[in-house]
Image (cartoon, rainbow, N blue to C red; front, side):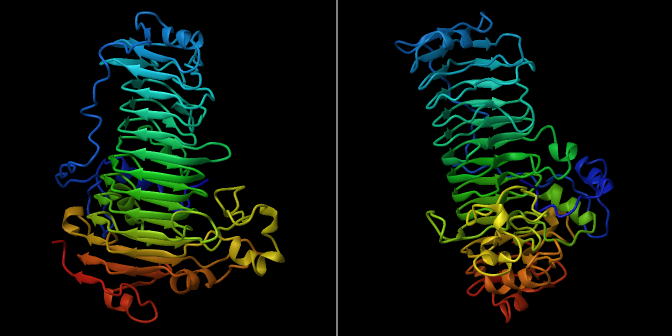
Length: 509
């Protein structure tokens, strides 16, 4: 599991220069603007403005509910333990706490429901690691604030053990360490505020995978407060939401903004995603990364002012890679894997004043059983045994194809790309689309050495841009990071991209 897109570590001086915002970067290619300086536009009425105006819970206990007293430490955990499954608990207004041991937590039973009265808060006091754990399915949390817990890195506070079927609605999970929330199969996270957590707002990970996840109408903001990429460079362990090995996810109508790092990141053998109608803005890194994964619809999202911090930092370091705000890394459509689509369909989105646009990337040295695979131990979904991807079999069919996570069958159409460099205070490096690979060199037994993968991703793997609208001075990186071309060459042979598209040059409009 890894941060593949960071092909090499950013020099510490450049990282500190930009991310710490002490001064600005002055590389001759960019101006000094570490965070967005343009006045942020108000979110659309459809954006999930949950954190500022959370709906109030029931002011009185529902009939048959067990009332929980905030004046009694550990009352919630004790009453949960002493009640049968399918009990409803109503937490009175006030600050509820657990007992003092760091592992004290609430262990629900199947079908338990937790309802917070107006002002009900479960507070970990920066002492308890977890709020709700255990493997009971179909637990419901509504109208509750969960704060002040200190889960370790890669662990979560709510649904710590990734039990299945949980419903999290109208709930605020904020100011915790680790991930605010873990995810199991059939989980629904709706109309909730995931805010200012130390690592992730939500970490969708479970041994054996997660199936059929819904993330809808949430506000996801200010996460990765503990800046994990600085603590553990290239860990790939930060952002608004991280998805690992999720098969079937609907991510709709969320407002994902102002996270340190990436907004939404699907990493390692995810499949069958619908990412639709989200407002993704002002995240320090990419709005969306879809990495070594399969089959997705990315539709009707508004994506603006993302990647200003991380993109600028890489440009300042002299890195020529097209560091994108929508980044598809070793990911593509695969008809042999069941999903609602057999492509990656990027359609009807508006990308406005982000640091660069969409990059399709495939690392020639990253494949199943390669030491360069940062998701070590994982193989593609087409090959069950990693050891099969070895010489001599990997050099011929079907393994030559099936041992690679391929960026293929990506269809980018009907989108609007707007760039005004003056808004970004950018002279160069923020204006790129890309479809490229590197020159394969490693390991010495790799069958993908040389330009094989670069030719394939650029010309042979059915990656298409068409019927888009461009406003601004866009350029295009093709084949490898050294080749940057203009719009006319992009549309001509041998690339023949963006048929039916239009470009209005100039800065914005």
